[in-house]
Length: 98
Image (cartoon, rainbow, N blue to C red; front, side):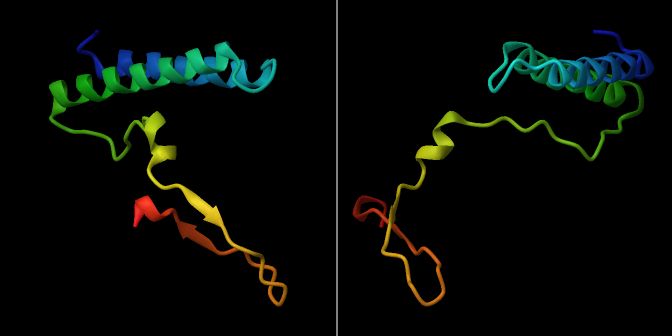
């Protein structure tokens, strides 16, 4: 890692460019190239943020989003019958979630 925020910003910008190119050339959902460049952006951003803080004691208003695979399991919903009057679906928590 460089302690130079400008150099780290250049790495971040390059990572964003690579991500865009991977998306443009994607071979479908869950393309490894897209996933790899996603991680590269997160890593480059973290290095930029650290260099920025080390040099100026400042940070960006941004945050790296890390999706937790268990997030989908937090709530299990059962589908209730559709209400014919307003075509909305009601959701109920499973008994064990209550």
